Amino acid sequence: MAAHDGVDVIVEQWARERPDLDTSAMAVFGRIYRAARMAGDAQERCYARFGITRADFDVLATLRRAAGPEGLSPGRLTSALMLTSGGMTGRLDRLERAGHLVRTPDPADRRALLVRLTDSGRALIDEAVTAGLAVQQQLLSGLSGTRLRQAEDLLRDLLASVEAGTQS
Image (cartoon, rainbow, N blue to C red; front, side, top):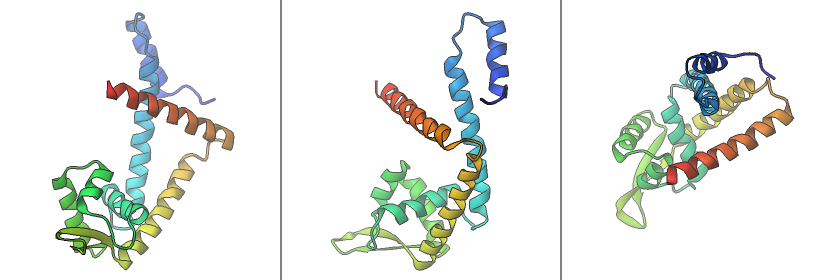
């Protein structure tokens, strides 16, 4: 069990000031937000070594894992990353200028485009995903295998609960 942390301090302060509040949700989400921010910052530093941002990584990783050699349409890519088309266009422009991807006409629909990785983009994302996973594994190294599996299961349940709560 971890020692007293900063979230405990905040929860204790609220308990003192507002003992009528149930702050258990604050304790859970406070820790999630802090862990996500710190992990995100570590990932950003890792990807910067490859000359890309986390946003760039997301595009390249989606193309690497979800697209075949023919690529994905910008619309499918936008949907997969839950972005606006404008946000996606800027990312694609930047990654294309860097030589990591190309946009080519869709042979099935000459009005449409497909986005695919270049050889250098594929090599880059393969290196970056390996390095990023190493960072994530290091961040989780304080958890035993059992605790890590418990965390996965609890977070899966939490995500399902949050998703269900946002649907109503």
